[in-house]
Image (cartoon, rainbow, N blue to C red; front, side, top):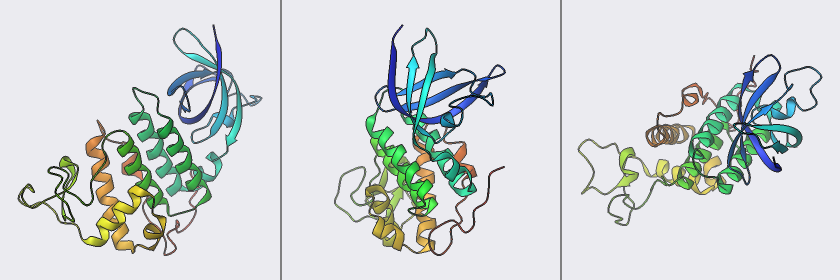
Length: 255
């Protein structure tokens, strides 16, 4: 049976027997792979720490009948320790990998792989606020999966914006002619921030006021939960408290 190699980010792990784990990975070329890492829970394991969630590695697989086996792993991006040392970062990363798990269910996607790796790297390096990094990732991942939101033109008719009525179920802002009664309205600052999160305009994102970031975050959460089947279990645990410099207030270790 063939042996193959690929870059991969670890999404989740499950215990198997006394010393093994089943590892779910999103790979660069082969999509999502579930493989057995034998002996990985033993103290003497050569690559146990390399196969923890949020880690990126060059992995060698041995193709099996039902599950592949991992025979080698070399670290490419060691993001797990930095992320798990801070509770806010940990909960955000958990929501990211759960999203990646869902949106890559059926087909491989290089774009989704690169997006997730970039988001985890940014989170580990504290390049931007934790909440903003998560929200930007969620909007981009959904867009790549075919659920791109509209924050300017009408999502139903295509009528040129700006529009302020926002309907999650219809895909974003809509014109007054198609907006259901009682549709909530978004202020221009929130719409501008949402568009910046989607396009990666970090100058606009980092300059946004806390209240605007909070409103945008609520919209992103609602949009994500609606469009992903069964929603995200990890999203309800996300800690969204950030200090005035847009970074987490204090590192809170994960026990």
